[in-house]
Length: 97
Image 1 (tube, rainbow, N blue to C red):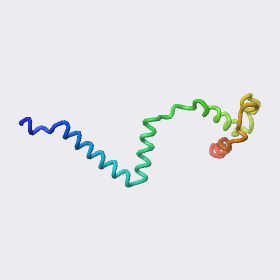
Image 2 (image 1 turned 30 degrees about the vertical axis):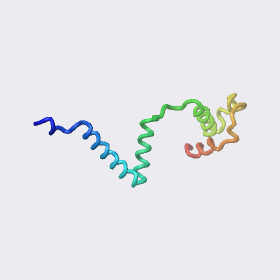
Image 3 (image 1 turned 45 degrees about the vertical axis):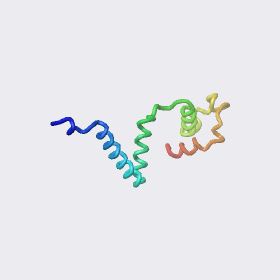
Image 4 (image 1 turned 60 degrees about the vertical axis):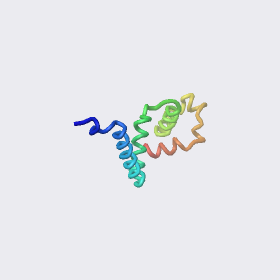
């Protein structure tokens, strides 16, 4: 085998790029496949890290609605919450009950 018979690394990379671009083009022609691919990439790039920051506050508001005001004496819910102006906890209550 001679050195000229061995494909160069650049040619190999070029062929892989061409294959990848053809595969991406075929995915783009099918909206469901494109959507699934984007969701997969999003899940890998930005994994779920649990309830953090404002999500904790929204979670307490939803929990309060699900338990019919069990936590309504909490200072946040009594004086600091703007839950009366948001539809989020109402919608989530219907989903979770």
